[in-house]
Image 1 (cartoon, helix red, strand yellow):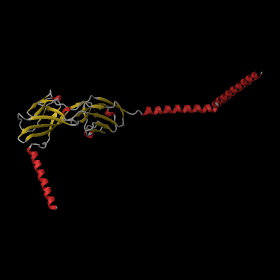
Image 2 (image 1 turned 45 degrees about the vertical axis):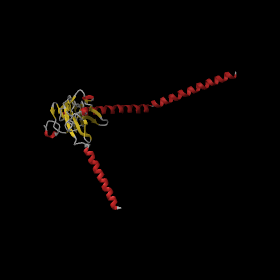
Image 3 (image 1 turned 60 degrees about the horizontal axis):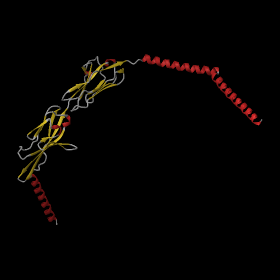
Image 4 (image 1 turned 180 degrees about the horizontal axis):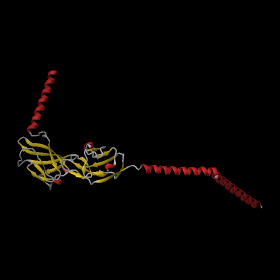
Length: 297
């Protein structure tokens, strides 16, 4: 029984080897190493299909892969938005004006008849589109009080690769490490070049000025318009004066209430309301008596 099982396994292995050899003979090859093509937006890129030389009987198709597969080159014609801004160079596609929407994975398929059937070969190309940053959005408070924590924000959503950020005060670049700068400037800020934040741990009057932010990557850079931040001292004397005034008003009101109670104004008012209500009750009873008397007569 053991020998028969071994023979059966050997036969199955032989059939698998023959089957694999059969497919290889018919040219059903596995995809080759993926290519990565990097292009700058609005420049040109070439998607090369690394297959044997083109023959009269060769049939070429290009497809863009993704959630849904779409044809790029089909029946010897460029398709979609590539029709008016690309051209074929043998099996390769030359895109004349690359856009960020072109980024993605592409596959070329070349089929040709052979003695043993239809020979098919594939190649995959990944297109990466580099995009310069747009003008970043900058958040700079117009005013701040000394000694408080103030955060300035800068962000770009279009750059690829992701941008790094630099802040400027009055047109002069702020160092990432403020302690290396001049002693006449505030050294309590923290700059994050990755997220674009500039935080003052204890803002001072020396930080008053016009701030702008620059977003930069390997393709280009853009800067937002400058915005002024005014830092003022906290008016302690004004706050104390306001507190004193409020306290005086409350004290005067309290003294007035106490004086009125001592003079009996509140009790007189209560007795007046009581006498008024009793007089109304007597008037109502007299009217009822007259009405009853007239009814009896």
